[in-house]
Length: 134
Image 1 (cartoon, helix red, strand yellow):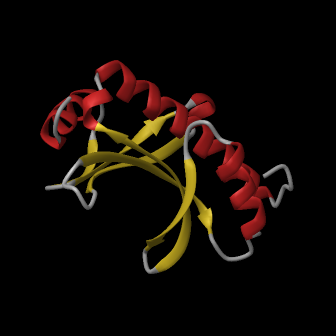
Image 2: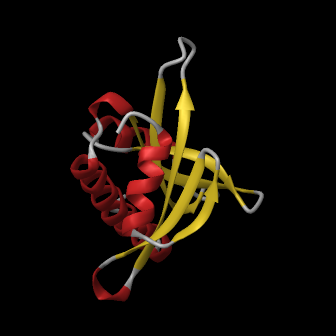
């Protein structure tokens, strides 16, 4: 996959798209126990013009979240990092991963979607329950 349209084509053949904008698509990933996790894919460009695919999933509101724990999480993760984005006008934690297109194929994209979706759902459940394992 060398560009966003290839990603759109692949993802659109596997999932029902909820959002389908020029450089942003989203869908719900079905998980065990009847759970679902929203997945967002967007194209980013760095200062040199290199393009990346960003995968993200919302995990909970930023309010009440300890920033030190978020930074510790980012330090310990091999895949995915926490970031803040607005969701319906409120700051919300997202689990994200950025990948250059040249290292991305259908299998790797599906692996990342599954990994981020499952981890995002687990984090969302911990945050929602007020647990301290995050």
